[in-house]
Length: 176
Image (cartoon, rainbow, N blue to C red; front, side, top):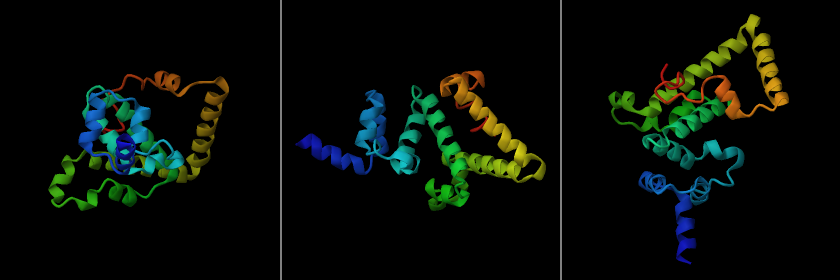
């Protein structure tokens, strides 16, 4: 009974200390997703604040930094695909709530937000240019079709693009 009550309470909001403890105890990610009520998030997974907290905490642990960076990259790509407003992402990162704007430059969320805005602007600019819009869309479609037809897994694609061994410090997405 106590465990059920604890599970219900924990689903509402996992604190960074709790997530850190789970990472240190090497808890199964499925278990952590259940405790944070993320297993049924479906298409809304990337929108859950618990998911973002999990990523931020995992980035602080040397053993999970690579995975967290990959997940943050996926989150950024999801936002680009959904054409999320940079102002909305700014608020999601709670950058609007920082008291001293001098401190904003020290926040990893600010760097991620700037990166997102840059990538979104680049993506939208390329697609808007008359000469490149059709080419960009066609190349993107052709590459995706080729990967699907060839049965290429996402892991194999990362290896082929030489992105499988990139650390967060090497990743151009996080270091413009």
